Amino acid sequence: MTPGRVLLTQTQIRARVQQLGKSLTRHYRGKRPIFLGVMNGALFFLADLVRAIDLDETEISCVRLASYAGTNSTGKILGLDALDDSIAGRHVLIVDDILDTGRTLSALVARLKKLGAADVKICVLLQKRGKQEVPLHANWIGFKIPNHFVVGYGLDYDGRYRGLKQVRILTD
Ligand code: IMP
Ligand code: MG
Image: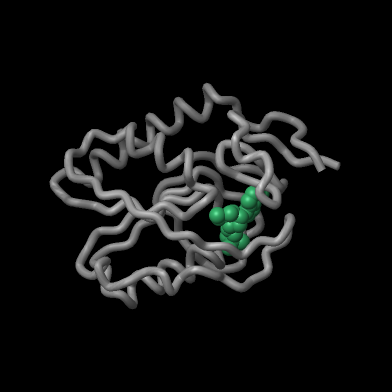
């Protein structure tokens, strides 16, 4: 398995992140949000997004969740127990690389609400068309993409290819 066709160039990603940053700035002005990055996939997206917003009081936090082995979702979400009630009363923006089946993010939203978050919203770089198994609304979506396994700009295949500057389709 190797990275094949380029789906999104560095220029496209950069331009879209700036647009998302502007929209998030308008939405969160006057609030003190926590941007909660889902590691490791959201690493670059989170870092670029935070620098594309113009707010003085944004906090950054990370949670490390995993459900994938190879190109298959295992359905079991690991890592949610690392979150604690310091989230209570806060406006949380979940930042993730990709919304696929939706299982990871809906489990995370449920956990944050249980811990007493005042508001939970979702920003994903990518949403895969036709793959969602769990009803979940992402408030900000960078790009809707066809149902391919993609790598690069944080997205990996078993830990590989995260550092690619573009988003590329994984091929045999
Ligand atoms: P979900 O629970 O099925 O929505 O899975 C979401 C998580 O699986 C994402 O946060 C990614 O880490 C991973 N994932 C899903 N699709 C892809 C892909 O095409 N490439 C790399 N990682 C993916
Ligand atoms: Mg992920």
